[in-house]
Image (cartoon, rainbow, N blue to C red; front, side):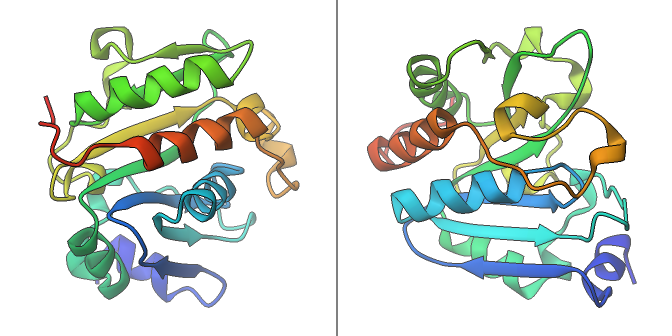
Length: 202
């Protein structure tokens, strides 16, 4: 059994998938990275997009590296990745030196630029960073086994600081209800609805 298998077999962990359009949103660190599953779900619902989430209880605190989240260990994740053309994986991060930076990693750089354009016009008080060289290497989401790169045309690893996802930066507040920035949801939905699927990933 892999660590991802173990997480999914926990009785208090919820794994959900809904297949709709070929644009997908995912959040597999839900409950650990506050508000990420809410962002993914609300953006997908607004855009009629597909969505995959894994949500753990706030008391579990089990961080599985993205490269170990494998479709071969989850029938739902496998169906999701087979269905979508591109995907935005919603993550949360918190660094005192980057309190207002929204980071766009992942292998599909055309989608990253498309998403960045929508974010810059919809969210105030945040710096949208879509140049890979300006993103810390460990947050770039470029590992080939990262599920964000396993969709047919890859995707974008979206790293959100606490404030834009409506989360507290303090670990003591884990599990507190999160209300994401409305402009963030608007931007993600608009990006999904206006994406041209024939664009090359580069």
